[in-house]
Image (cartoon, rainbow, N blue to C red; front, side, top):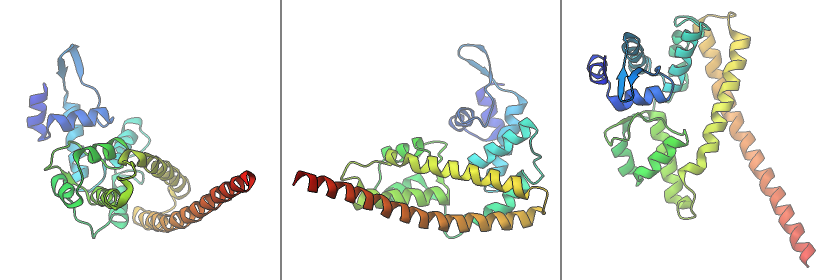
Length: 240
């Protein structure tokens, strides 16, 4: 089938479908000719599964991608500990229930941001957007991140030339820490408890290490500032 039929059967627009392919959530279509793409029933099934996991389980795309990869490689079962049921049980325990989702246009007006800010945040992997439409729905976590950048930019970071692109290391650090945490948890907890107990323990770990990381970051920042101050002062004394 061609793109138009795939859109009709799934209810998903072509920009979102192309985004899923770029991000590895969908396999590349067959291309018998340079400008011809043929999609299969597998594309339909995979898109409908992605929609189900987003709409019914409220899972972010990065989690959905991990689940789909586990299914493809045979490393996990969608109803088992490493799959959807565990993620479904964990998600409401660690996701914010006080922040409401909203639309991109509403957020940009509220925060005084331009589309370039949103594009930079997306390219830096700070937020996940299928399209840059002003009517796009934004998750509560991404909405909070956009508001935080709005506070930073309007508070003076924009005036000194810092952009959302400069925040990419934060996304990279978060991804690396999350990969380490999930691997550590799976290696030690898999098979030792039921899904609900595992989700409770994982949520405790997320909350505790989140607070721990904040404190460690404060300590590291103060130490870095002290070291740089000492180096600067030493340089001033040498000049005198």
